[in-house]
Length: 243
Image 1 (cartoon, rainbow, N blue to C red):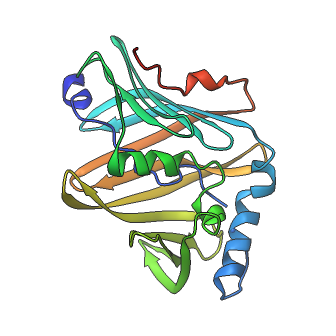
Image 2: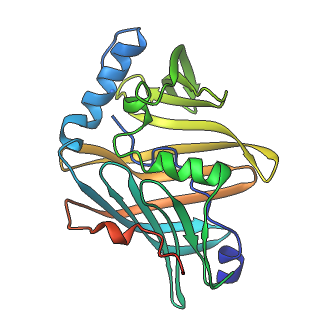
């Protein structure tokens, strides 16, 4: 059962995995983002240096333990733990890499869309907060339905033309869905992520359930435990290149 899971790379399409945050009944994008930041506890989040999430990932019928570690400002590590070892994807602030001993004994660089995805996952406060610094533009597209929920649709456009959409619940102002168009191995995909089971920890409100649809691949993550401000050395994220 596990072989089917580990033969395929884990594509990190959680797009700002724990980016939950924004403001009330204003109709401007700035008002909505302000309520999002208030709802998600951005002020508390900005005081946190490290964030460790422990849970399980289900993909292709297999469920395995995972750990996700973030360190301010832009370090990220995602481990899938198996009886025989682990699969790791990480970003050290400059370089992204993957270690999958079940596919190759070498640690390999992440490139292209996979590098872009993990770089965005490493953004500690999330793209809805940092889009200006990155030179992205933002636009409000009014209200849409996300299942049975009503949500504000906010679109972020990058200079390269890539578009990301975020859907903020009109009552809670938390992100309940995001989607982005990707090119993977030259093939276009639309990756959708759905967020739920929101809980408060360390003054933040975080999703403990994430479901991602990337083409035909369905992935679910359920978080059991979140720990904040644990000591985490930089070398834990660094790619140890062979000489």
